[in-house]
Length: 73
View 1 (tube, rainbow, N blue to C red):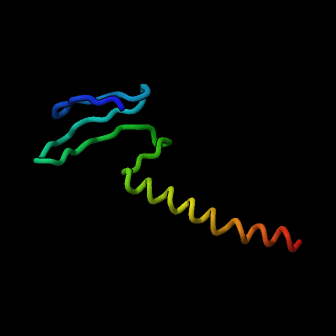
View 2 (cartoon, rainbow, N blue to C red):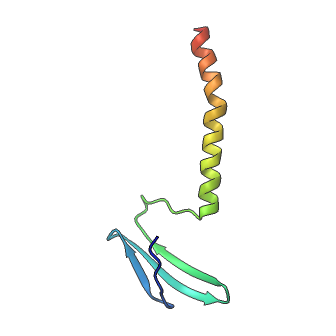
View 3 (tube, helix red, strand yellow):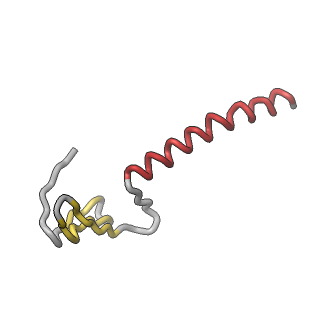
């Protein structure tokens, strides 16, 4: 992991087309802004983890149903 120090209104650039800027610092919270192409999905990590877990669960529950249809064909 790369760890960088940034002050308010300072940015980092990722892959020539994503800019992450520190917008505000209040106590233990930092507000960041992200400029990226619309084709780049951006999620908070906890939401991303929930999406991944839901996808895994859906794949696991759908698989037996699909297999039973194939076997009964």
